[in-house]
Amino acid sequence: MPPPVAGGERRKGDAAQPDAGQAGIIRKAMLRHSLSLRDVCVLIITLLALFYTLNCAADIVLPFVFAMVVNLLMIAPMRFLHGRLRLPKPIAALLLIIAMFVIVAGIGTAISVPAAAWLTKVPQSLPALQDKLAFLQGPIESLQRGYYRVISLVSSSSHHHVSAAAAASSSASNSAETLRLWGSSVLVGTRAFMGELFTMLLMLFFLMTEGDSLLRRIVEIMPTYSDKRRLVQITTQIERNVSLYLATITIMNLLVGLLNLLQCWLTGMPNPLLWGVLAFLLNYVPIIGPLTGVVVYFCVALISFPSFLLALLPPAIYLCIHIMEGETITPMLLAKRFTLNPVLVMASLLFWDWMWGIGGAFLSVPMLAVFKIFCDHIEALTPIGHVLGGPVRPRSLRTIGDPVSGSTANTAL
Image (cartoon, rainbow, N blue to C red; front, side, top):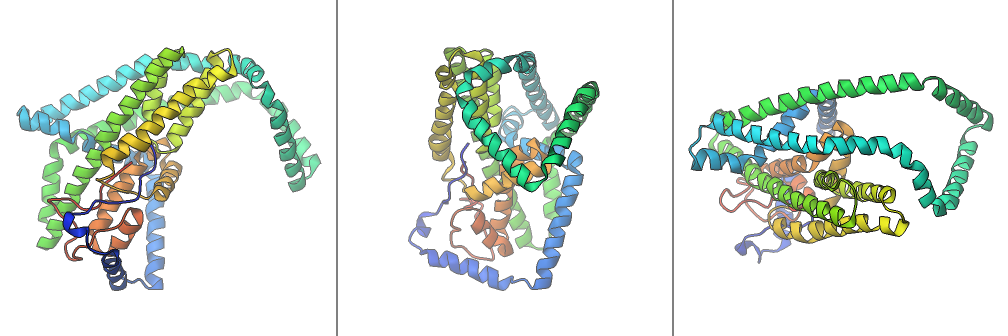
């Protein structure tokens, strides 16, 4: 999926108003809430402490954040079951969670066997890959020679040879220990994943059943009517825009996965279901996900097909499908709803991937969208919201946002 496109939604009456009015609103907010050097230092220390806490408490915080995001995705089916079919909330939430778990478990079971077979097949396919990529041997050797020259300039050659010999001897003697440690780490990782999954599902159930009552209690303790109204506006915008974004990209990613499954079946790649599911999952991660998919498709095609030119066909089709979806269809569906700066999307992706791993990469864009909505509804943070996305439409600083038509804080990926 491509990075969001800068731009924003305006009312018909706002179209004739100049951009200078928007700049004036932001300038007034910046002047009214100017920070001293001490305030900036305290803010930096607070952010560092917050990020350090999020990093240390990732095993606890990450399932909660995932539950909140999945809850936004489940809003529409939950309203259908509870509002239209008159099912009690606990039963409706339990049915949705069971359906989601059955779908995920079924797909995981279907692709686990071919995925394991490919992992065991990769070492045996390395000689064939070397033969097909023999024409790249000369440039690769040139790059290696240049790399070793740089290494020799940085460190002495004797130290380099000693370390290389020690690494070779230690790798031969400790291979069994490495395999044992790898197996134990896989088991520990599986247990940790199952624990986090159970925590996420438990939190999701209570969010779906008691989330509205929790929000109502929080609104009741707000001190003033304007604070109550602002909180309702923020939650409404998050529910409307982020849930719409999640539902839209889920449908588009499902279509991308189906199209790639079809193209893998037509081109003769083995296990098309595995690569279709992989394309579906990778499309949730902007930029890096599709690039990883192109590389994976090329490597698999290189192993499966006899010639190098035929191996270029599946990744080329994959790239064309992604460009058609990410550059045309999805922006056309969402560009009028929300905008995020592509540079900040990439920065958020890299930061949360470093902070929380692959889970943070999946959550980076929804969290950035929620943060922008908060910024657009809080006077002191309006300049930050303007930087995060497209132009902020002129509006009163006392009441930021419109519960009827929506604010400019919408998302287009």
